[in-house]
Structure formats: structure tokens, C-alpha cells
Length: 123
Image (cartoon, rainbow, N blue to C red; front, side):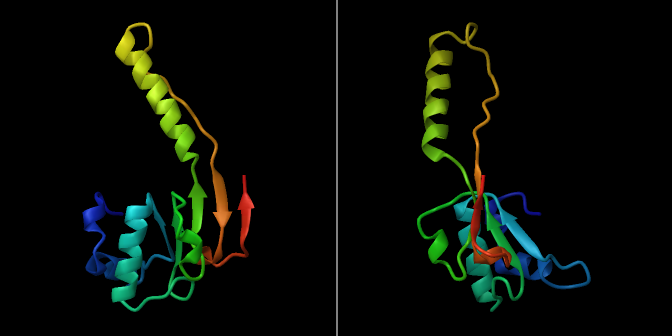
């Protein structure tokens, strides 16, 4: 596990992919981390599904175009922004009347080729 996306170097990935405790899959937290993992895998000449699985917590426009298609957890980005703005404006108006609260939004698990599974969508 890395603490910051700047730590996702090819050298760090190499340590994850070697030795007796090598990882079989990576779950990246956002598209920036996913791009860094893909870059590192390219430098190391490693292939998704052959050498490891890859899942991203964030869908982005090119995800399905990255061979063999990137498996993702799709989040409702617009609704996330809308809810965040709504809470922010209420709290700015009166923080005592509008305390911090937890909001849970649904996600979709979009299976493409990068996890080694047959493509589908789970809700």
C-alpha cells in the first residue's frame, strides 16, 4: 500500500509484483493513481490480466479503451458535486443549524477485462 500517489513509481510497483508475497491485483483509488499504475506497468513490461488484475475506483472516458478494458467502480460524480455544494452552502449560511453529516451515494461495479472477468455491470 502507498500513502500518496507520488509513491506509485515503477520501482515500488516492481516490489509489489515480485517475491513470495507478490500482489495479484491492484485497486487504485482514482484515475490519477490508475494512470500512474499503468505507466509503471508499461515501464516494467507487465501486462494487465497476464501479470495482475487492475480495478479503479473511478470511471473515466478512456477506461474502456485501455486494453483489455478497465474494470471500475463508477461513482455518480455530478451528484457527488451537487450534494457537496448543497451541504457546503447550508453550512456557510449557518454551521450550527447544519452540522456535518454522512451522505451515501450508490456506485456501479463495471466489470471489463482488466480483472480477468467477463464484462458486465453490477449495481
